[in-house]
Length: 153
Image (cartoon, rainbow, N blue to C red; front, side, top):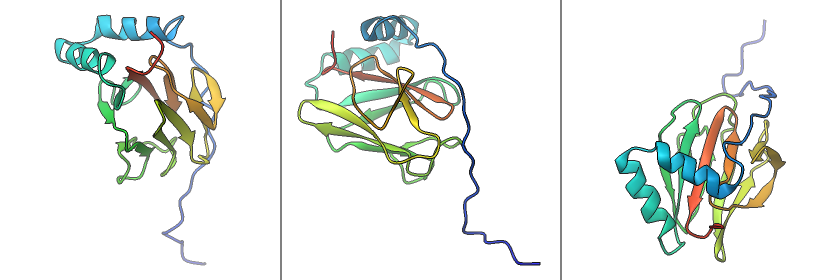
């Protein structure tokens, strides 16, 4: 019997199904999230919304690790299951190097890195999308809320 190759990664494509987006508009999503937030989170949300647009926030608002938050700077962030990722999402439904968010001009752009299970923004399968404040990003089992001063208000 051949020995197992311990360097290979065993993954499979999972269809997780689409869930309804939290609100009827990006602004409604942010307002709903804000109304349910703790006082500390409200301060962070307000600072982000009134900021200069050079940074944004990602909040995990559904799924594992709900409540975690990550700052997105003009340098951008890597999202994935690799521990080196700026936004580390430890679940087999997430590729090691799943996606990135980059600052392009005055906006932040989400880019899927050819992940196995794909990425969704507001329930739409995407490979690249300019983000607006209130957009919901789904990566595997994780639902992330993007908040930025550069989004529509």
